Image (cartoon, rainbow, N blue to C red; front, side, top):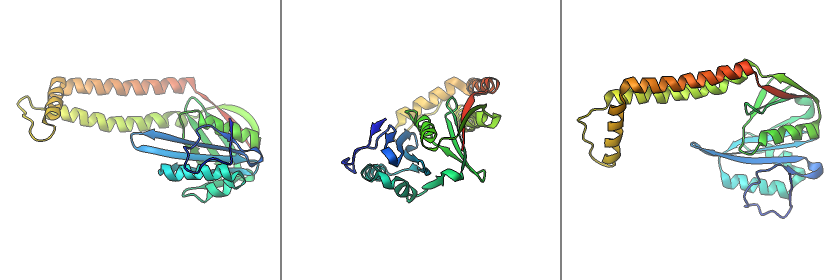
Length: 235
């Protein structure tokens, strides 16, 4: 962990490690980039409870927020809570916090049974959040086996996406024509794609897609049998 500095410029790059803010609690900001762009998340934990804002899409605004939090650590909960999508739960409102490291799942459950999943990061941010909850909010620690739905929900999403892509891939091989002559922009790329589609053919395309689907299902079954454990803090 690194100490937050009050003189941090508001436009500086957001920290990726948990920041211990003394009596003001622990601040954990992070950004994850993927094919859909980048999304930033921030969680604050102190003895009063937890506050978070997830899925922020404007890097500049996120950097400015982190800078303000560093300059006003005692106002962290209020500043995060006023962000779009910002949420706060007091200690008395939190029922349990669970963390399954193997599944990359961190879930906060309130007294009413409503759950909130905290997005995964690239540098164990979920683990940092869970440890900060234990540090500031305490709770009864235990372990339990992950339920089947927690294990299969990730692979199901992957299968759904892959099924759409795989279906298009098979369809593309069926319409590829050995006599096709590409024209216009990127004609070379079009010609290459058509040649690949015709060379592979729908039969081998189906075999490839089926093998990858079977691999995903097999890995899911292995996890179901293995049953990853998750850590629990009951407040």
